[in-house]
Each structure stands twice: as structure tokens, then as C-alpha cells.
Length: 415
Image (tube, rainbow, N blue to C red; front, side, top):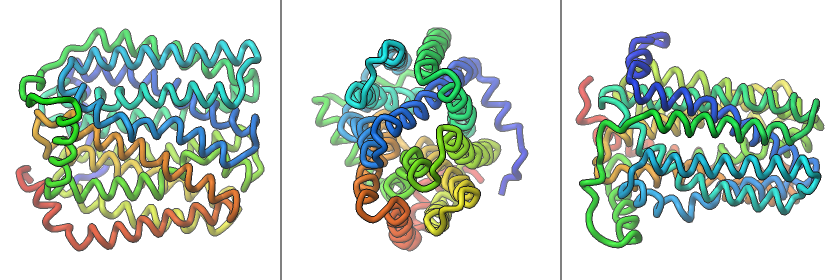
């Protein structure tokens, strides 16, 4: 097993010029995105005081991915993925500036917030398909596993810094400045995307047929693959059972711990620390060999963390719980992505990776809506505990098939 601290795989990936531009611009944009996510969550709580509305907002943000990402994956297999990313990032910039304008003018309310959140959810469905299928084309194949994990690490560093900074801005000067910051960080990322070039163009392998038939082909391919199909169940369980808790932290912070935006900032940042450590652990491994068993193991970590998280209203113990939840989600989700990137056929990459993105980003919308609604009747902690049962059930199913899954995902890789 690789030792934590092996930096050679990380530095080799960062020496890839196109990936270096991508990760530099993307990291700046992610700080703004996470600052905005905290701001929307806290602003929703301040406007409504309702866990159900927090669930609605998460649903509006995430559920469009379920509806649109399979079709977005077909688009990503047909067009220039870099240009597709530029378009979606530009639309994200416009949404952030619109939120800033509404907040500065005092016209923002729960409905305008919901509408613009739904808009960005639609945009991110296409952005996810473009981003997940573009990254492997920015470098030589041997660096893909580390690059995917580094992309996740930067994402989660932003989860740590963005909310902490946004909580300060929210209390000190108001929500509008987080939205404005996000708009400018998008502009920087768009500039970086103009500087990169794709090393490989995989559009030549796309079969003829309608968008819908090609989307169905991607789903059938993933479902029938002896490794990709079962490992996606791990992502479904994490997305349905664990990720909704992280989406509902504004409600947990307000209803359980009775804290303001500062308390929410700490919760989001501590969950991000767990995710960062998990991401760097994956990045320094440098290979997906042996990774499948760790991905399956995150179901147990997630379940135990959820049960511990719901057993008390002690804020410090809550921080410990979200730390392990953050680590489990990233190792399970990003580890699955690395395994799939190595196992999938290049001509199917956009569709299959968009299916992953649909599950990882879209399924939590269903979980957040369900937990937020149930919390109105049985309390947040009771509603959240159900996610642990989901993880245990998936663990029992996948564990019995682990040998065939490992062979399918890792069998063609050198040890």
C-alpha cells in the first residue's frame, strides 16, 4: 500500500501544463462557489427558519443533474469539452452577479433565491459532464488517477476556505459580497480555460443515433459493466445517505446547535478538512490498484459517523462527526471516479462519467428533500439516522461481490 506523503505522483500530475492551468483557475473559482453555497444556505435559513426550505433549496440546486446529466454526457461526447466548460462557467458567473444585484438592491427573497439556484443547477448538469470527461484529456494517461484526486483535493480545500471566509463576510458586511466574489472568481477560471488545450479528442468514437438513444447506451454500458455497475451502488448509497447531511448543515446548525453563520462556517470547514485529507491520501497513492476495497469501506465509515452524529446535540462531537462524513464522501466518491476513469472506454467516457456526476450530485437532492421533510415531524437527528441504514444495506450487498468488482475495475492495471 502506498504511504501517505508520497509526493512524486502529485508533482508529476501538476507538471502537465494543461492540467496546471485547469487546476489553478478552477481552484480560485471553487473558493467563490463554496462561499456562495454557505451564503445561500444561511440566507435561506434567515429568510424562512425552515428545515424544509433548506431541503427545497438543496433540491433545486442538485436535482436538475438527475434529469439532465445523461443528455449532457452525450453532448460532452459530441462537442469540444473545453468550449462546453467555458460556456457553463460563464453562465455561472452571470448567475452570481444576478444574486449580488438582487441582494444589493434589497429585492432578494426565498423565491428569487430558489429560481436562481434552480438555474445554476441546470447549468451544473452540463458543467459536470464537461469537467469530468475533460480532465483525463489534459494529460498523459498515467497521471489521470492522481489528477482526479488532486481535482477533488482542491475542491475540498475550497470547501474549507470558502465557507470560513463567507461566514465572516455574511456577519460583517452581508450576503451580497459573497455573491460578487463568486462572479469574479468565475471570470478568472474562464480565462484559464482559454489557455488550456486538449491532448486527445475522443469525439471520433461516438456512435450515430439520437441524443436519447446514446444516453440510453451509456446507462446500459455502465449497468452491464461488472465493475462500474456495482461500484456505482456505493456512490448511490453515499449520495442518498451521507451527502444530504452536508447539504442540510444550515438547518442542523440553526435547529440543533442554535448557532449563527459562524457556527455553520466551522461545520462546513471541518467537513472539508476531512475531505481534503481524504483527497490528498488518494492523490499520493498514484494508482487505483487496491483502491476498490477502500471505496467499499467508506460505507461503514459513513454509517458509523451518521449514527454518532445523531446521538448527541454536543457541537464539538458534531464537528467530529462531520469530519468523518467529509472524508467518507470524498474517498468513496473520488475513489469511484478514479476507478471508473481507468475502466471506461474512451468513446463512452462522457456518458458514463456524466452518469456518475448525476448520481453524485443529483441523488443528494432526493435525500435532502426527504430528510428536510421528515425533520419537520421527527426532528433532524432522527431523519438523518436513516442514512446510516442505507449505507449498511449497500455495504452488505457490495461486500459479497467484492472479488468480481475488484477484478473488473483493477484487473487490467499493473501492480
